[in-house]
Image (cartoon, rainbow, N blue to C red; front, side):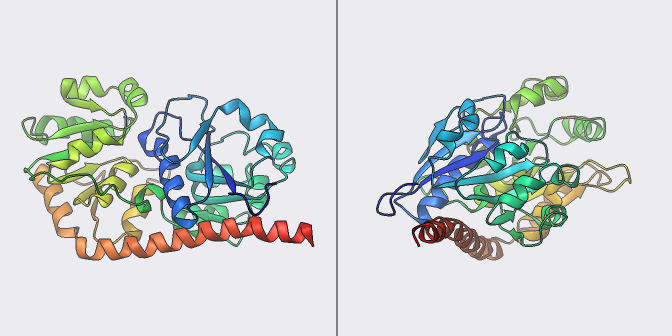
Length: 350
């Protein structure tokens, strides 16, 4: 552990290198928020994804995956911070390795995680080991509360990170940015209909936020050459700059619409075994006022209907102060995580 007189060293653990832009930008967002909480911090990031795709590194220092198993290295930090993203929605090692968890000698905290019930029990040692724990929505809190009670909700770091004030907004057209998710048998028919009747190829853009999985699922067959396969958030933001609204099946497509802000339709196209529409996007629209509206698998995929849903539900005047308040809440959680370091250091010295 470093001397209190020196900057604290924080290692962020996430799925940053899995090829999905929504995960790739989490490390940047967390680093920006951590530096708001304490500008002196040294922030490092370690992606727990085996895909090892490159991800942006502004304000933090990426370290390779093999370092996760080097406990001398991991324990050289002052704080381990797991988040954001769906680290508990599917297994990410070594967070699910009880022996690894028990070998940690530094505080571990969680921030804005997504969680699903099938995995919280196998991740129970990690969940219990965290000094402080926050999730990104009420659905995730209900799942994690099967293991521990003291779970806060702090919204996605990308949604709440400081916006890039250098981005210039262009004049808007009537165009739509369409953001499909990886096709499955439930979602593909809706997107095939949208491709035939909804997309104005002269003014719209179709953007893939996870090129590898989206290509493999059949994007080229449905959209042909119209797809922009994004290699970073800048591709999405460039597509959004001159267009009026966003229709997104992907969660982070809706989040970037909120950050702009742009009127948005969140598409919830997948049902579970009980025929209930399930989506983290539903939770986002339930929690965030003024973003737009939801369309599900029963909604006729008509351009005019999507426009009406987005514009009728959009309220920028409500959205901005809400996000400012939620940013304050997330910063308070991060400051509490940093305070754990000082508290435990004082206990050892005492």
